[in-house]
Length: 361
Ligand SMILES: Nc1ncnc2c1ncn2[C@@H]1O[C@H](COP(=O)(O)OP(=O)(O)O)[C@@H](O)[C@H]1O
Ligand SMILES: [Mg+2]
Image 1 (cartoon, helix red, strand yellow):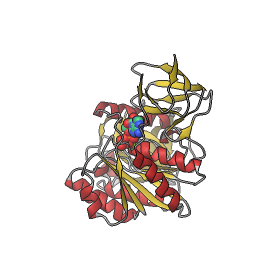
Image 2 (cartoon, rainbow, N blue to C red; image 1 turned 120 degrees about the horizontal axis):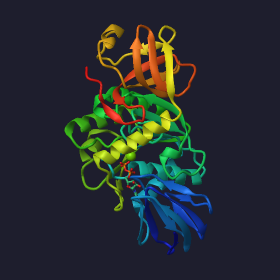
Image 3 (cartoon, rainbow, N blue to C red; image 1 turned 180 degrees about the horizontal axis):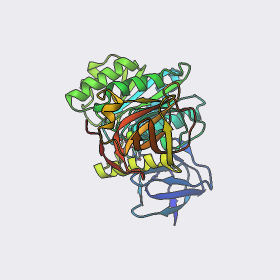
Image 4 (cartoon, rainbow, N blue to C red; image 1 turned 120 degrees about the vertical axis):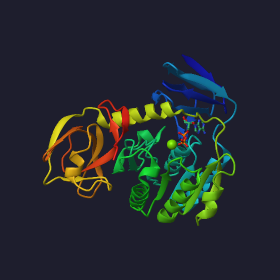
């Protein structure tokens, strides 16, 4: 369909959908739209198109996609204040925190685009292992933007760390260490760190304070609807900004999140086939609670997610364990070489990326 969007207004496009700008000027999350280039909005996601002049759009909607026009911008003014603060910093680490569905990933995308537009290099570290956008779910991904993006999903990872779990409370130390490692890689640029939405209960507060102390961000952007981040921000040292949650966020149910994860696993399992790896030159890395390979073979490990790691411990590919017999490991994964270590994770997956449960120890 064709849609004429009035100047200064915003069209919220819910996926599955795609659109392109035919005439006029418009922007999506701080990125100016190029005419005739089609952008895709995935299922369970929403993108705001802001008209700079009258914008003539061509839109294709899938089921249950929709469009909804709102007056003005859906970008809170504090998001632009954050851009100004970051542009002044030029380098350092900026951590985005907040509960689920408050716009953390969207703010990270907006900052990335705006900084890109200002010519400031800003690597992004995506520490939300449950709703990972840069790497597959269960991983922390890092990427350096080389252009405008409509989602962090569009960024090409240059470093991924495997945690093997989709729940932060189950892999706290590994997650904090992983984010620290990836965010300390480039001190000359301005690294944006996106985090998971576990912030509300007392354990979450202890965990997030610990994360902040380990990572030592130069600035914390706390997205909140009320005073819910106070316990974390008063518990941790460091400069912080309060950021408004947008009014038009799209909340997701548990099953929506699962579906987003399935799509995330599939992105990294597309083209996977059955492959066999001989242990020996390749080490098997077991979860901490598992003492030996013998102990591992007594457990039902079928369908367990695994990480294929290089010599530096970075993820090359994820895989799904199909069998472990003596020193032979059969996996469903994409081709990769230079595997030095195969790490067992905790999530069980079908080969089409559907979560089946967790490893019972
Ligand atoms: N400023 C905004 N304008 C329009 N939609 C938004 C805005 N911020 C977030 N959303 C939508 O709300 C949903 C949740 O936002 P997201 O950034 O994924 O939250 P979080 O990362 O905190 O879980 C997304 O579909 C996103 O497109
Ligand atoms: Mg997110």
